[in-house]
Length: 441
Image (cartoon, helix red, strand yellow):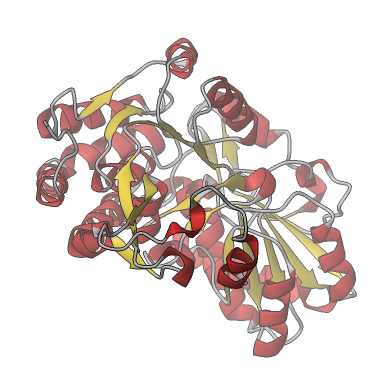
């Protein structure tokens, strides 16, 4: 019998080959991301290239132990059998990636899919065309068409792909498109992972280190010009500390990007005019406390902070996904948390507090995909922490071992011995019920 599933060694070689080609083409990747999003080389390595290199290293190091069949206990009524769980590839996997991290969010899930032994079809975003071009070069150099194929194009190509039958679909993008993907997958009963988004809250309590909170929130929010699915979407701060928080935000933003962020080599641009226009409509000029500079021609909006925002303001309706940070002052923390809980469950949740007990209690009680206490975004940096959403922010998760598990079907196998054959289960059943009850109690 011909075995078509690649061996563990073959999978590791595929990943190591990918790593070598990525490092060799790093200059091209840098240029592509600069052209598509205005990303600095540092930010590109931090959030795109370096991220996937670390993921490859982690997976290659641990793959052999993850892929081994796991023996599990077997109840006495099945004596003398033994039981195993075999991680098995699904088959052909479709991975659809977005434009905001167009390299990382294409390659990172592919690493898990290949590690699990699958074949992959990649659909990069058409909104980051320069990165898609480099991705094609990398994939065609690294893999045969029957291992990994890349399909470029826009809505028409995506719709055609979704008509096809895949064994698994992995999608990263908006909630609206996620619903379309899930509906298409249902036609073929195809399992899916949906990595979506939502309005990720950031809570500052009365005990927090305001200066450090402002610094870490400013970094997490304005990285990639706020075009990050787990960026703090809005900040809840005690009313009496709002002025201090805004002052420290302004201080750190000037340290990050200078007096004129438009001239900073470290501040990216909005992906296109459509998204610029959407973001511009969210600005409330009289509430702008920091920033507010913008240029449609240059697809630029400076790091902008708006104060005294209320839950009824338009900016609180949907995920912002851009460099605008609303600050909502509150009087009572429990009431603020109740308002958060009324809304769709977010992809990320952040708490800044020096009261460890209170912070942990908030994290335990609130429902969200993942998050941090006294930091932002950094939970993504730990490959031992699964990354994924809940409810409207997605389903399923990945990164590290969880990526391998996501793209693996856990196949159950029971091995029965032939030397012993207990007759209890066979007809005729007359007089056997009492023995069966004794056996299964």
